[in-house]
Amino acid sequence: MKITEITMHRMNMRMKNPFTTSFGTEQDREFIILEAKDEDGTIGWGECVTSESPLYIEEFTKAAWVMLEEYLIPLTLNREINHPDELTDLFEPFKRNNLAKAAIDAAAWDIYAKQQGISLAEAIGGCRTEIEVGVSLGIEDDMERLLQNIKEKTAEGYKRIKVKIKPGKDVEVVREIRENFPDIPLMVDANSAYTLDDMETLKKLDPYNLMMIEQPLTAGDLIDHAELQKHIKTPICLDESIHSYEDARQAIQIGSGKIINMKVGRVGGITTMKRIHELCKEANIPMWCGGMLESGVGRAHNIAITSLSAFTLPGDTAASSRYWDEDIIEPEVTVKDGMVQVPASPGIGYEVNREKLAKYTVQKETFK
Image 1 (cartoon, rainbow, N blue to C red):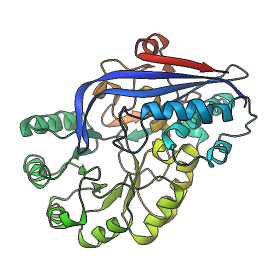
Image 2 (cartoon, one colour):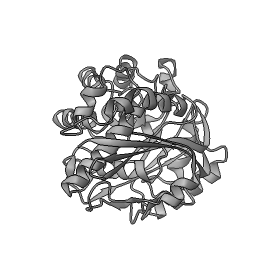
Image 3 (cartoon, helix red, strand yellow):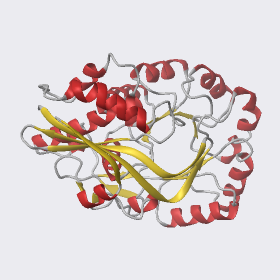
Image 4 (cartoon, rainbow, N blue to C red):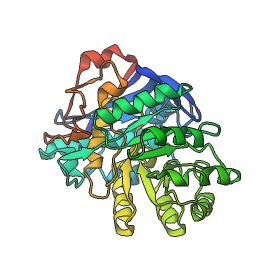
């Protein structure tokens, strides 16, 4: 392929409800939709899953825009590319900035799959026609509201409930949930809110039969997670600690956790994700696909990714209507009995509604 034109759309979309984690509350999502056009006119879509502030990781929307505009887009335009895998090596000299890299990578993979006349899932080696999905619930001040949310989501058929926790809103929250829902598949996500000094608190979660505790300690850490895992029975799932193949390899080697949450943006794209997938498959490390409050474009890529064989646990790819009054894709992502169908049509399998795209675009720039 030869990508001859790239358009960046800086988006601002308001979620239905505020979403609270240990590092803050978000309701207005600011991110970038990247539209790439090949010389034959094929269009591919990618999503740069940043936020307005560098809270989850160091990248944020304005910085990613500059990275794309000044470095990654000029390097990509009008270059002969035999396969999307080549972009990983092309971008390798630039340190981190993985969310920006992944946006171009995603659009290139969409183009590639469309040119081959196959779905993105098939292009990356997926083996499922439908995927199990769970739902992620933010921290709530009102316990009754949280319990009601869990009741609604389990009734809708979601295969797993994830609840955000932080110091002071952890053991008591889980105890209350288990008293009301003793048998649901339940996990908690700490978003790096704890340290080894909190080990006794984290041990108190062991009796509640949790699927996992996600990223309890510092983002990027492997050593302290390995120490913590020795002392708690609940499996640790790594998220913000895995930014590369080497991170995953080292984590597995020293026992930093027993599960990996894969976010393609966090590792820089589908090519690196595939390498980590093969590593986890060989080591019998279960994987699942995490969410970044994506619009339909990023959600479509997540569906394709979850079709890979090592993604054995329900991911965070909830229905579009879970977060948005209206999404920017057609049809919107829907969930039935906790399952999402993997599109069989070429590319990501969804069409971007340009009217809705324009409605939520606050900045737009085209590069040729």
